[in-house]
Structure formats: C-alpha cells, structure tokens
Length: 219
Image 1 (cartoon, rainbow, N blue to C red):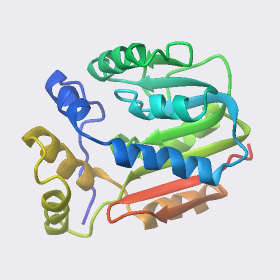
Image 2 (image 1 turned 30 degrees about the vertical axis):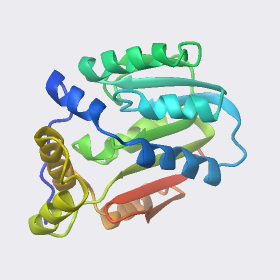
Image 3 (image 1 turned 180 degrees about the horizontal axis):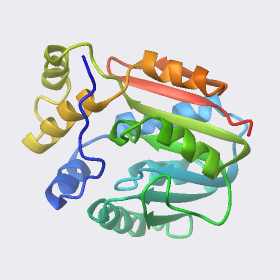
C-alpha cells in the first residue's frame, strides 16, 4: 500500500482535545522505559522532544530522569497550550520548556544530548527531514530514540487495526489513528534510508503497529 500523507500539524482544537483526553499512559510509559533500558548510561542532559504535542512524553521523561532538562517543540498551538497547563499541574516548569516551531527549521542555541520523538515521523512529508533534524540538533554521541507507527500492507489491515485497538475511542481519535497508519512508513523504508545515510541506527518492530529507531549519533 502506498503512503497517504495526512496534515503535518494537529491544529484543530477539537483534535487536540480528543488526543489529550485519550489514555495513552501505558504506551507512553513503555516508551520511557524502553529508552531507559536501551540507554542505561543516561542520567542527565539536554533532551529534545520533537513533536511533543501535549507534553505527556516530556512529563514522563522528566519524572523518570529528574536531572534532565527537556525542551519540547511542536507546531500546534492547541497541543502546546494543553501541554503547558499539564506541566504546571505537575510542577515541572523547572524541567520542561515548550516551544512552537517546525522541525527542522526551528532553532535552539545548544546541541542536545538526546533526541526523542513519539509519533512524529508519520507527520513528516519525507523521512529525510528526520535525518536533517538529527544533524542539526544532536551533539556527537547523542542518544537517538524514535517511536512511531508502522504502515500496514493494506487499507483493510489499517481498518482492522483501528477497530481492534481504538474501537471505543471518540470518532476523531479513530479517524486520526486510521489516517496516521496510512501516513506511516514501513520498517523496510526506514531501514533503506538508514543504510543510504550511513547511520548506525537500529529499527525494530515492537508491537502490531509500532516501530522503534534507536542508536548513537556519531556526527
């Protein structure tokens, strides 16, 4: 099945509210624990959460690694507004700062020790944007950790996954999940890109519809 692009940004406040209201606690905490297991040497440093959305991943990362400084960037004001409120509720303003911006044109004055993203890749028009972001934001030796959806082999499979995993979700969330599956990359596409760019990253499937990319950026 060919990739079908979806809007790069979740600008609709109703979409943002539907996403923020969904319970991703188990999946998001698993992202943090996978990072901790793979990069067990990490304890503190400057972390970039690309496509941070409502900041749930940033908040969980800050709780797991209290000595880290997390910078979240997202292009959706609606998502960032929810994220800032949540950060205040958890009293984590000293650890997390959110910015509105588009990867990779957004800029920050310092390189990052960690580049983290959850569900960013399928919003990008091209995978090459992710590699541009790594080169722009990561310091040499930085930990790279991306989690995203996997594009199914057919529309029928995408519908089946949607009905199986988000059957009871609000309509907006079900629609967005289905569209995100269609917009995602396959493991093969990502592996080919990694090889063509001579990047020493690993890509692996971690669930029926999730993949993980991780490695160390060697500059």
